[in-house]
Image 1 (cartoon, rainbow, N blue to C red):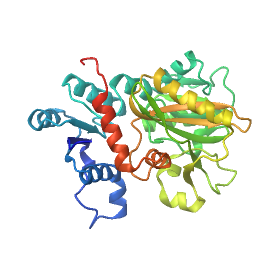
Image 2: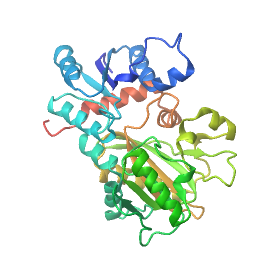
Image 3: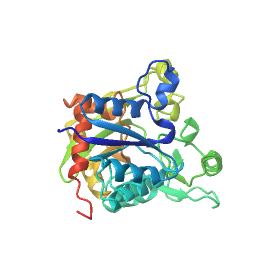
Length: 340
């Protein structure tokens, strides 16, 4: 790819330094993705500027008007602390006729709203755990037609926010406790779904009209005791000490039956299309011991840290990290927004 002017847009607290020297491991973990992306793009020869965004788009509008970037590399996951508002930033880029990486506003809206996305999956007969939504302020009751154990999570938040061992509940009393926690502590409606015991698999997809499916990745729960549910809690996903203690890791999924692999491929592509996604996404699945595949959710614009699942699965497909970022920019430049 030719040399591009790339405006990397990040949260205002995550603008990375020029070097890792002098920074603690804890500090680096906060903005590791932003550092990996900006540094790699510069090493690839691109002219890169990084812009922090919090609760105003004025600085971004001025940077686009004055510098005229070829593409905005979008690493925002929220706007003013609200996860579902990132779609509005992307919509604003489209109004400015500014190419960008990642998912379009409609795909972000549908995938971020987990109850709505699950309704769409159900309509298109894509297997997913049965679910119910308990809104804030509503009386908590055991949803009809759902069977314990149940899994309680936020209807909108991502990155496993609010997910812990207590999220898997076995009776009505614990269900009420966890829903109250979601309403009061997380400030979110509660999504309650039947808990599916099985392997947790992740499938990366890239593309707009034509899609590329990356190798299937798996969350391996290591030596976690049987008394703990094998779920991707916040500690499992982000606490390196906890991961080391139990040998928790992610890796290429092994020994998947051809029929299951075929289902994962078909469903990943179908979900990408049903939710109107573009750019890149990661689909989360559970596969039971008898080979039944359940779609859990779709994650538009997943983590792009060089050592995270999406990039690692790209390497397994023969796509280096610099090449992966180039591909995502090429997809952004070729995406046909409505104004085109």
